[in-house]
Length: 156
Ligand SMILES: CC(C)(COP(=O)(O)OP(=O)(O)OC[C@H]1O[C@@H](n2cnc3c(N)ncnc32)[C@H](O)[C@@H]1OP(=O)(O)O)[C@@H](O)C(=O)NCCC(=O)NCCS
Figure 1 (cartoon, rainbow, N blue to C red):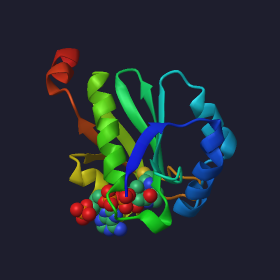
Figure 2 (figure 1 turned 60 degrees about the vertical axis):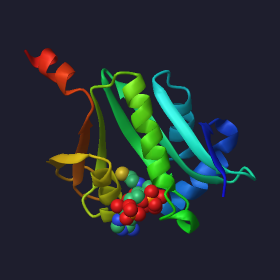
Figure 3 (figure 1 turned 90 degrees about the vertical axis):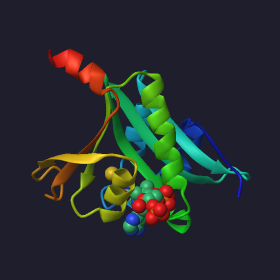
Figure 4 (figure 1 turned 180 degrees about the vertical axis):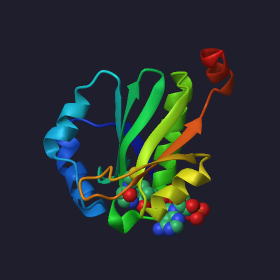
């Protein structure tokens, strides 16, 4: 299957919301996705097959010098085909190109598949946020340092 990654726009949100609804028990609203598309420091990308079907997406945003992965999901029928990896590697490239100090995210404590994905690409668990999610579940904060030299300079 040949795939392509491109910036998302409003016309893609039906597909985004369908994947989101099947990927999580607390899906983002369409309005939240719409709002994210308008943010200047946001990176909102979709991975499509040759027919234009959305296979997966990510939403990320810069907060100061950190790139924050806000949401990432792959369509249920397309899990474990490497698409999550493709998108995470793209995001790491964005982070490096923009000279982010780190790429950071929160993940549900019970979400082992996502934690395994992040660990595979060099993320480490750095903090547990108690009752972070609306249903009371804890979040694990995971971080991948990208510029240790820069970090040392910042704190010296
Ligand atoms: C997390 C998610 C995006 C991974 O996407 P994916 O396309 O299935 O991932 P990949 O095929 O690229 O897998 C890459 C690595 O992730 C890990 N992984 C992915 N799914 C896994 C699973 N079910 N169990 C264990 N490890 C898993 C493995 O280390 C895998 O490497 P391997 O294939 O060499 O073993 C996908 O499971 C998903 O959409 N989940 C629902 C939404 C979600 O939880 N998003 C994260 C919010 S923080």
